[in-house]
Length: 354
Image (cartoon, rainbow, N blue to C red; front, top):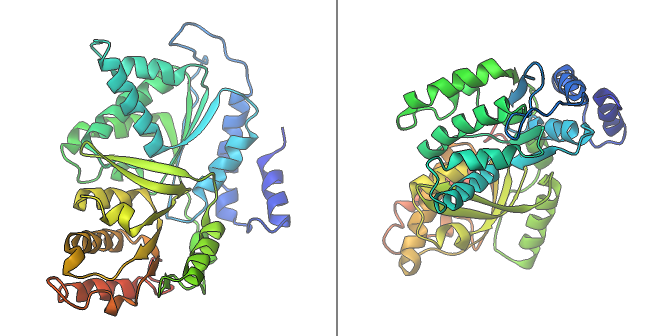
């Protein structure tokens, strides 16, 4: 089993990574988990595959762009077992919700129990990327589900932008979620990746992030930035918000890409855009049109989207029909759009999201 430090140094030598002592400091925790997972596990029942002593998982948190997902992926690929899975947290919860809907149709009293049994089947390692709780339903489900997984002997490694105590912060009925935070801290090692560099911002250093007019050249520049930012396989990301499905057509490692019409052409509201802002750290938005009374509803949604991204410090990369100050020149809402134009201009600065 090749040590992670060796794998890391090889990637540095190839120019794929920069050496970062803060990143290297977490390797002993990963090696602890690799050594534990390398040991054979005695099966003691359908839902109780356990090691003699539970293996504390790892909750890796820190600011955006610090390399959390990259480190988890290095670890995941290096674990030499078949019973492992790596998935984005939102996608995992989407599967859980779908499984519970199917279970309820069978008339079971507890729809989560069969979902939990299926989740732990032939699984010893679960890596969840970007754990965030924005919905009370998810808040209640995830607590029970983690208990099922850990009791079944599954090792959980997760990344998050938030320290556990800030999960579901200010959420509805948050007091019901607090026992899970205590459970999380008692069953996982909590590790802050306090790196000083934001490597995603480094990739954007000196790059234009707002392209107008929306020409073939602008789209080519957007495509080039997208290629440089994605770190994993690209797939749609669907967020469940108050019973609605909000889909980002392309997603990879915290970076999402959608068109104006994907996000503003549908009847979405503030809660939907807040969920998007929580789920991504960089949003590439293609083909923002000129705005007027002819597309007033879409324009209002765009204003709400920009407000959500701005408050959450999400980096926006966009192609548009014109510069911000000339996007909305006439019709109801044009005066109010001046604030949005100012925010769009501010969000273009190199140090805005740092």
